[in-house]
Length: 90
Image (tube, rainbow, N blue to C red; front, side, top):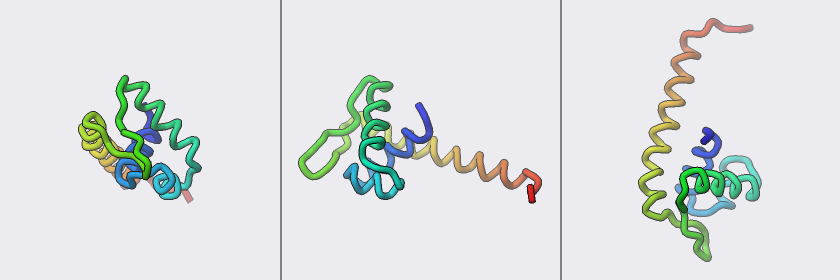
């Protein structure tokens, strides 16, 4: 599971639509869809229901969303902490 897959999942969950999430992430739809499918494959369950006007989280997706947000927040904290300690490279 990659950070990119988690970011993709959160964006689709928040946008409710692959196209809008792709624009938000500066991606095209096909790679974003592949990220979601790979994540679902790795977890062994569907996270979204595909509906005519977008994507809706299934119960497994609802549970995973809070974990994914927490993981991404911790990654941001880790990156900030290291950058704060690292000497400037000019």
